[in-house]
Image (cartoon, rainbow, N blue to C red; front, side, top):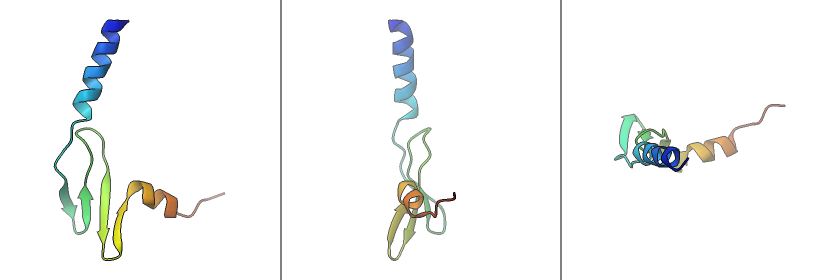
Length: 61
């Protein structure tokens, strides 16, 4: 079992490496890690990341 844990830890360390943020198009930026996608939308009123967008989105019933 320790060998499996070591392999898993190595895989997590690889996909969780920081990546320099870059502009995708217009005011949309990629700000995630190596294998973890996260986007940022820059607006004159402030920045919106995925978590803020989810909180602000209307919820269906």
